[in-house]
Image 1 (cartoon, protein in one colour):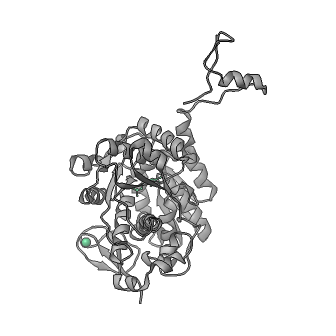
Image 2 (cartoon, protein in one colour; image 1 turned 135 degrees about the vertical axis):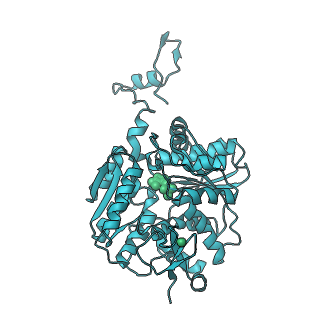
Image 3 (cartoon, protein in one colour; image 1 turned 90 degrees about the vertical axis):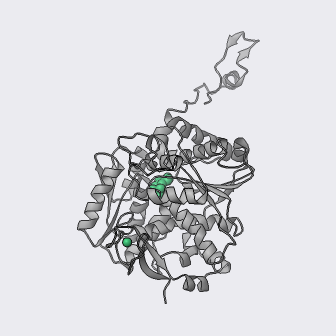
Length: 424
Ligand SMILES: *Cc1c(COP(=O)(O)O)cnc(C)c1O
Ligand SMILES: [Zn+2]
């Protein structure tokens, strides 16, 4: 007996064994993992989960990896913060943040990569790889190092220096491709096609890979005492993350771990590159965009692989999508840091800025229980933040200089202007 029957086409329902394959031979629809839900329901329990590892692998019964040989750097089991100060600032009564910046390589991509690389070992592949907007590269680099496998990573050359430094440290083959992520992804897909014994986590083993993000929903529900939120907000790039969170909540209902999974799902995408969010707002087709530029590099995908399904998932759930500007994204990074002590990269700024806009527009109600997924760490995008911060003032190591600095701007004793402490 096993929990995975194989793969199944999301469009025509054609079934396949569990192989390295991401599209249907019959209709070119995307394949997804086909589980034996009766088997899973019989084997899963809250007690078993509670006694499991303090990582995504506590939910192994809901993941497509069956061997015990896991590539586990400890992704997941992150704190769901009660964000009361940010909630108050935005006018929300019950706001939570799942902080993904504390994963092993500082983004939620460790979840999907841990699942994908563990599955790749089952397939006995010779190498692994990915196309990345930055964070997946570090996650694949780190997990490939742990697995002892060579990795081939295709990135657009324009991403943040911090992300490039981090991915290089793990020693993978990093190839910067001229153009955008979409160009890097097209090349990586051709490479995957010509090397059938290589596993490209977000290409030819994508059906298994995306399952890792379901654990964001599991973790949220577990920390809410096996309840679901009313509304979640997630960033959108390819759309895979949001679709997986949706499946995660539905799984919990299906196996009886929660009573209902009536969760509204809303997304946020930077205005300058927003094919999915724009389609949600206009209830139109997802039209790929080209020649975009945004500070939110990890969300800069012009031709989103799961765009159609992400838009449908959002609208079917009763959610909506926001499109903050780059300036609003940077402002939201500061707001989150200054209210909750969480430093996120522009993807997280996009999500928080989106949350703010959705509250302002009435798409999120003040009394809803809202969970926001903050997916990446601000230390990776320091170059982006520099422009919005002032250097600290330099003084001599003398008490008088300090007192002068923090004194009221107009000091009647001195009758002169004193520079204020640098603030932004
Ligand atoms: C990749 C990424 C996303 C978006 O994920 P998709 O599944 O492509 O929609 C969001 N936030 C961060 C930090 C990412 O690295
Ligand atoms: Zn099909």
